[in-house]
Length: 162
Image 1 (spheres, rainbow, N blue to C red):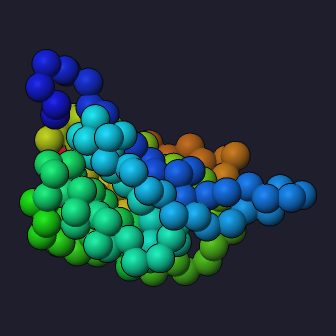
Image 2 (image 1 turned 45 degrees about the horizontal axis):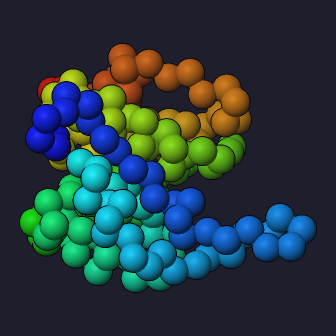
């Protein structure tokens, strides 16, 4: 975490990659001159759906000391630290009821687990699992607990310690 702060600062960057056009249509847009904002955070989370070729952006941010996580839907996510990518497995969706908010749920799950444990990869796995579970219900009905996420991971023979 940043010096002189006990707060974990996590940025979900998707809004910076969007432009709302006429009639509310959303378009992808490039986010330029972003380092001044990004370097004030401990972790930046973005989705491969947000813009084109974000792997390079995540790598560059991580070289500046910001943990960068690129989510990849059911493939999981890639965590970038010091310019080095590490894939964290996801879970194939058996049935998707509603994907609305799954990225926000990933971000919240990661922040929760990482603040408690300080373990980047286990927190990423926890977030992947929570986001996966959220697909099973309407987004306004998501009510999974930490125990639910742990049980899901155990059912997949994955044990984490957060």
